[in-house]
Amino acid sequence: MTPAPDHTPGDVARPGQRLFEGQSAVVAWHGCWAAAVVVATIAALWLDRLSGPAAFGALAMIAPGLGGLALLNRDGPGERSLVLMGWTLATLASQVLSGGLSGALVGFAIMPFVAGLAVGGPRHGVRLAQAGAGGSAVAVAAGQLSAWWIGPPEPRDITAALFALLAAGAAVLAVRLSWRVREQVLVQAEREARRVRAFLDALPGLTLVMEPTGRIVADYGTPPPALDLAALRAQGLIAAIHAPDRPAVLSAIDAALAGQEGRVRFAPRQALDRRVSLAIRRIGDAHAAPLVVAQALDATREFAVEVGLEAARAEAEARDTGKTRFLANMSHELRTPLNAVIGFSDAMRQRLFGPLPVRYADYADSIHQAGGHLLELIGDVLDVAKIEAERYELSREVFDARDAVSAAVALVRVTASDKGVILNSLLPDDALMVDADRRALKQITLNLLSNAIKFTPSGGSVTLTLETIGPYLELVVADTGVGIAKKDLKRLGRPFEQAGASDQKAQGTGLGLSLVRALSELHGGRMSLDSTLGEGTAVTVRMPVARAERPAPPEGGAEIVPLNAG
Image (tube, rainbow, N blue to C red):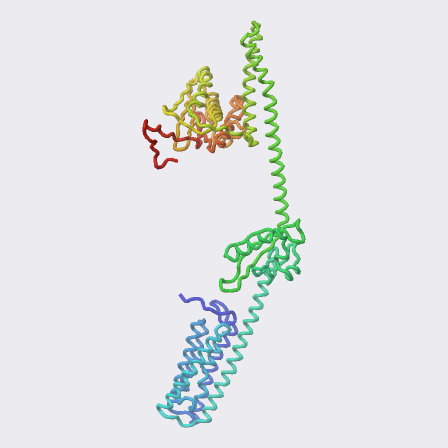
């Protein structure tokens, strides 16, 4: 596979395209040279002004002209270097065969240099001209050695002048050809620059080419309304930015210089109510002077939307905080009279002040039961409100977790028995010491057991398991109740969220699992639900509150502390 040639437009033809005029001229120059050498050599031979080895030297100069015709098919730095090498070898042969500077072909000595000018093009002209000059010097030196070894040739003044005139004409044409190719490249470059500028001007916003200091090197497109293009050109970008935003813009420029994309938004110094966004990238290689290109777009609309969203969010948070405080205050105010209702109804149920008619006794039982349920609901609402208002404080202590869990089991065992639900509690024989809030752990257990019993039909079972796994205390309550649909699992655990049919929702308030989740998270733990509709539910609470108890030291001896003890 041939590598792509390193050339410029106007210097060389590309595959599948029409020949550029510069390449065509180089090929024509070679063809004219070959024809001129043939005519001059025949004329010299016919006039008997050229004979012997010098005639063969003149014929040798036809070869590089014919070799240059190969540029019609393939072209590139490698091919042009080969053509120049052919010129050098042919000139070397002509000088050796003609006797060097005193021979008839002395004018041909400059042809490698002339050929370097002709074939070099705008990008390689200097290098090939230097190589051609070296080839001319080698040819002259070889001709002089030949004259010294063989002897000087017979003087041929007219022939030497003829071939010198031919070489001079070729040199003039080569210089004109070189300048013409350079003009074509400049025209092509200017046309390309206009095309690139038209493309950049059509882009949205303003495109800036800048130095790292913010000085504008070039600008394209239309600036955002908040930026004055004349001021940017005169003072640079940094001067047009609101002072507090300048460090962020400079950091974005540093990120672009490091090879990353810098993105930043700033307020213009002359219009603080507007915003401009910048996307910055480095251009050029690491060895060139550092420059960055930045696209500036008007970001005022996006900024206004964000400000509006932030204000709406703040308002929503304020309303939510107010709602939480209202619930907390109302729950507290309702507890006092409700406790009195429960107390008086309990006194009536127990007939502390004498007997009651049967109907009034039933009313007292209903009032006591409803009041107890309402007090429980208000307590849950108050706890949820405190947690949401971040006013709930844990009262942590070290205790045996089995005590709090067993107390909760005892509270619901009668309810489970009355409903016909089998209640199992699997507690370990050894103490489970934890550093937690005793009331919160009891509340978690009570809520989970109450929920499980409430939604488990008669004949079903509820099983509580308590154990420690490393630093975690794990409490699992599993039942064989109605279960929860998969679509409802993600909602449960938020306040007042319930699942199931309307008759099932009527049995609760949706606060139980919310309290369990909140109290678990306050301890640094989490709650997870696993349920199958129609088969049952398992709720797992895992909290990092377990404490490893050290064994008591032996009598009369020192305590043995394990190496990995915390």
